[in-house]
Length: 499
Image (tube, rainbow, N blue to C red; front, side, top):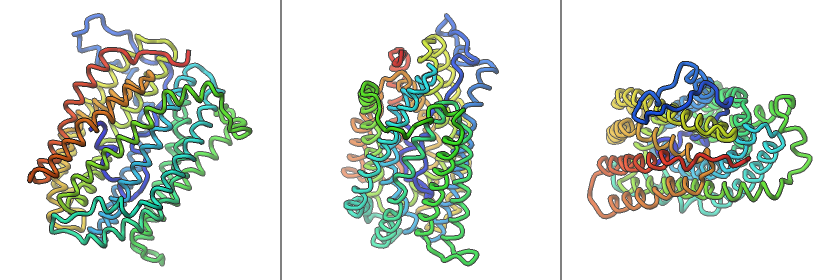
């Protein structure tokens, strides 16, 4: 399951956080050396100090933003978990549905973002502006579709995750809480998509700090409002999960206001935004190119996220305790996975900029070093996550059954983390060169051909307990690593698509 620990598991009560942030730009060729002639020389996977300074300068701002977001999401999750297992599970299921929208939005904008990154590498501001206009149309269309789906089919979708099979939880209460949360979060769909359009474009053009600052403010607002509205502190009413939803909506509106205001108040830095709304028309040729390159990514993210939702639904057949335990495990893994999430997405821009500048040798060399750095980092962070696996579930006000399962899920996720790092990096390597059809096969194709059938059979036609089922489903990431290695090594992704 590609990037499963980032994308597949239910989100924290913080709501629609961007699991896979937009990639980061870099000065083409900065700190890079030509590849070694000896292919067996492992030094080709290790950069010099200048290379790592360049990479960290690009990735750290997004790591900080996502680190704060996920840490606050962790605290939010614990707060909701203090109310009860049903509330926590209802929010987790609703967020699994919102997660599908999140990934569809990401996929739709990622296709346009490929052109934004390479236009930036070429110095074409008008092209970047047209890419942003396309993103705005994508944001509006996907938000309307998602709102209609959640309005008319929200309840039956939530019911798919509610099954007997454990001693924990009331299914009717869980359904009610899930519907309550989902009905409010529908108001957040378009603001979330809008800020993603702006923030991703800013990152593609070198402005990583403004989205980071906006994200920091948003998560702090979310944290404070969650504390006040969930528990009714300082004279505020105790609204429970309704308070959690309101806090998330307000925080994302604040984030959108900051990002959009900064973009348009600094025209000298954001030339692509000058006259952005004089027209929303885009060149037909560019639109067709984006559709051609981007449609596979949109379809891929739709199928991938829906596949992950089906996996979660398969796990839920073992009872409500599994839903709660997976939610707890996903919360802590999101905090640890910010490293390979940020490094992996950075590949899309670092390599994309070099490809756009026709620096093919440097692109290949940078890609080798970035993949190795990401995997090595996750060996360390996976070890740290395994050490806290028995301790973290104790923070929740839930049953011993849920705590036990959550601890085991965290251990399994920690062991698989380096493999996720490699497949995540491979995905963005292929995407950087516009190989969107291949990423479709590699990503959602693998999920539907391998992961979903495996989980479906294990959950419905065997009596295996949930822990081995979960471990087997996660371990297929190793097979995907082999496939990703072959694709990346072939160099078929090395192409300039904006020349």
